[in-house]
Image 1 (cartoon, rainbow, N blue to C red):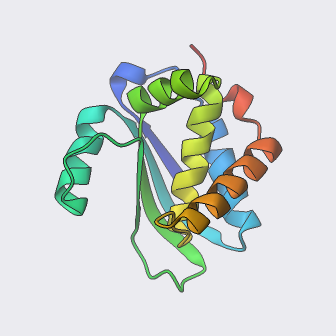
Image 2: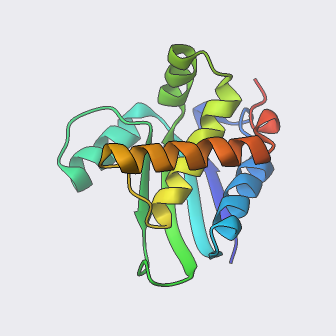
Length: 147
């Protein structure tokens, strides 16, 4: 089964579905897994805030949320990644990064979470950040955004 990408209509046409698919597929394969079925949803702050509140009991903005739908021990990954396009745009401004690079980072970040990578401790955050940078350097994030 493939990776499916859904884009909120208000962001339609700015995100390359093909490039998003390619980035996530690359990360999953490089980490020694395969895609069974993964959905990437590019949405707004309201959607991600509702998910954060419902599933994590936190009332705060967030840029990415990932849900693994099958067991982590399984090598064929089933999951969902939700990315807030407004948060990605804000992060890009804050960190002085191109918007397309930040969206690529969030795809990679969500993908790593689906593969049971965590970022709760400082050491885990460093490992995840290093992997994000490594994959960003190997992926074609430049073609991710058309705006």
